[in-house]
Image: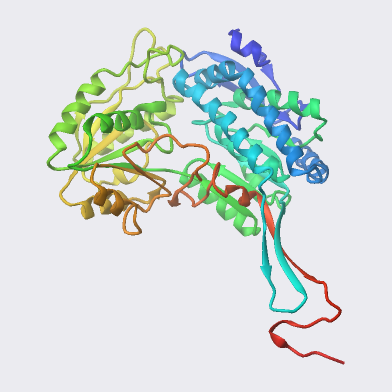
Length: 508
């Protein structure tokens, strides 16, 4: 067994159901965690049955009744210690992320750093859960609003960020006074087990009640239970648009809250005033980082016709230098796709693009031979397309980059916005007017709009999320904490009379 697995207390066979210090047997079957790096099985993990799920939710409910009474700064102190514990295990957890999911080691470390950063952010917020005071129209009255803990927060996360997305939600939910029930992706169960064990160390030391942090590994059926459960007032779900629509419908039917972080189809507009060097860095990393499996991955380059040939030629040279292989080897730029199903989707998208008339500038394909035995390593590819192609309108979670020309900035912005998704966007320009137009109300319709940096790479502090089929949710920064709390308006009468609003008279 690899050393980092030992450090994280990952065993050959693990329970994937926990309420904190208590680990349940897990009667929902066994999940096999298979690394896309070398195709080997890492370890097994039990999943939750309906009965296990109910035990977890009931424990979380009880834990909430106590946790909500802790002061917000006291909860923040616990989160601070979790950040410190993550610092101790950054290297080991980063390696597990890389090994179980397939992203490069530096990206694995970066994901754990995001966890640390959100803990730091949440600690500060724990002393800033501010309400407002308002003047009343009634004499001798005072009005104010305050925020209270919501309850049990369900977190459904995806395989591409197996630890960070959970932490974005959990850290804010915990300082808000909520408890979390986490349903990780069944493709990366060991990451959730490792995180739970790290958190448990801190919780036990601080006598945090059982049920504040729970995991329920399993397939889509566990996600359905969370979505339909009236005991879970909020569900935060990250994944495909298809999955998000199902969650939204289920949660909405019971009038619960859903926070959705779904698909992206992100574009970079490269103007005639772009700095080519920085443009290439942003575009290439955005397209091939995490093997194109980020919701913020760059899918489309919309290039001014005067720059098109130059940009394409430089892209071809850059792609020829991309090193593909074991993501734990820091010399490699790109690791594998998560599994063979993803490989098949990648190949299918290439064929669909060709059928619609796409011309491949850099050809794709599956890599074979020594080091590629898992069958999950693919070539990043580039295709010249039209924006209206059906396959271009669809998000393929793979390193396929589409390039297209434009004449005017208005045309480019229209092309950028003319997809169902609305997560991340960017413009490369040194022209202030172009920049400001892109950021204006008539510019990008995405939740994230960048200038002279790529689409990929969220930063803690800014609210992360998008519009349209991306779901509209916001996580991690700004006032995203409000999604995890309930607002209450209070009116206090400190006078001797009871005047009614709008001067209504009601006396007897």
